[in-house]
Structures are given as structure tokens and as C-alpha cells.
Length: 135
Image 1 (cartoon, one colour):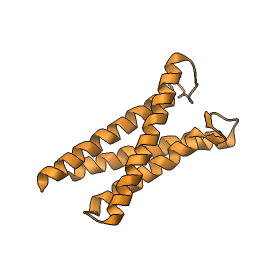
Image 2 (cartoon, helix red, strand yellow):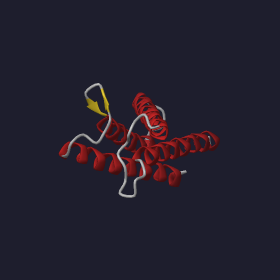
Image 3 (cartoon, helix red, strand yellow):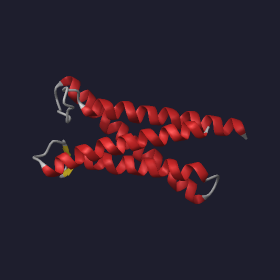
């Protein structure tokens, strides 16, 4: 089970790295990220990936406590925010409604974020399933 948690944490760090790169680019250049109200989406995604990575670390050692419930809530809510934003961005990109930041090869980065968060959620689900079966 630890390997699954490690993979989830690694994917979370990959999300942090990608969101940080886009956020840094957005901060130093003209806006490359879409905005929700006045907040660039990439900043929100970065914060969520940081919380997801921190939650993976805290969920490793936590059994059943109020603090464990807080980290699970942070994990779930942050994951849901990233999933919704990545799904909306990807759908908007495919329909030509929105424009996500792109890689050098022209691939929209919201597609990568959608893949990463989906994989993280699958690993979390498998981890929870294995944890329940172990008891």
C-alpha cells in the first residue's frame, strides 16, 4: 500500500511542479492563465496541488483522529476543485471556448492536469480500498 501512496504523492508533486511553472510564467509575463473573478486559475490549482501533496504525507501516518479527518477533507476538496477546473478547461479547450496555457509542442496543459488529478483520485481510491481490506 505504501507504493500506491508514494505514487500519489509523486503525482501530486508533479502537479505542484507544473502548476508552479505556469504560475511563475503568469506572474512574470502578461496573463497566460484564465481568471476566476480576479484570481488566475493557475494560482488556485497550485494551492490545491500543494494541499493534496501535504494531505498525502499526513494521511500516511494518520489512523483515525480529528486531524486525519481534516486532511482527508482538504484532500477531497482540493482534488474536487482541480478536477472541476481541469475538466472545464479541457472541455473549453476542445470546444474552442477557453484557452489553457500550452506546452512548446502546443498541447494544452489543462489536459495534463486532468490526467494527473484523475490518476491521483484513482490511487487514493485504491489506497482506501486496500486500507479497508487490511483491517
